Length: 222
Image (cartoon, rainbow, N blue to C red; front, side, top):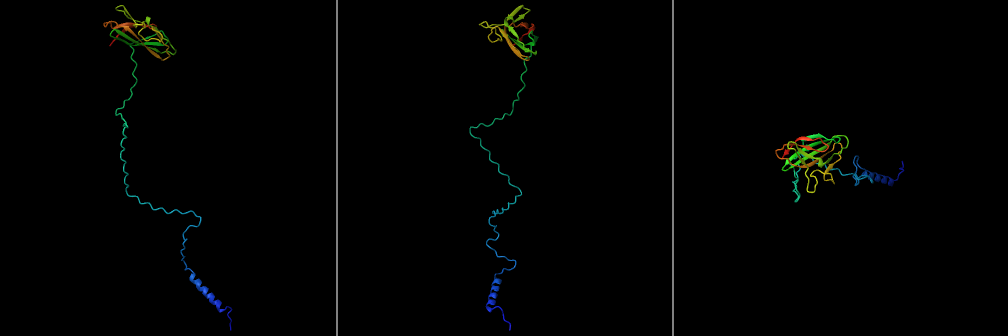
């Protein structure tokens, strides 16, 4: 007779544990879903939610509406546009010389640019130009200046005002003289007033100190 080394109670307990274990075992390939399934591990940064898919572009986008024109502010002048802009022209050319003489002052040339009779007055303008390469100083004493009508043998001197000052370009502080230092390339215009010769006289001689006579100088009538 064979004796079982395990008592019946032990065998019953073992059988019961085997049954319980078989009931709790999970079927192969299946896992019980737990509340924390898919959650990131503790301490990991939160993952951003997936962006919603962008809507598909339409075949032709509608153009944006243009903003309405802004009304002008009251009191603000509207900009003025010149439809015909003026282009600045060249500077006017200096008057042409009626006659020219070389003076006794180094490098200085004298140009008579006006010899005009108007009423009872003869107006004379003379431009003195330094064409040399050194400074020069023309000096004119008006008691030595005159106009001579050779045909009539008559001499006309520079007019004076009621105070005895010559009616001409004067040096400051003088009433009978003009002088000025002219650098190379510089010029100066002097003017003088004479009694006008009669209308039938068409040409006379102008005498300036330091300059040869301007003979047969035609008179310009206004």
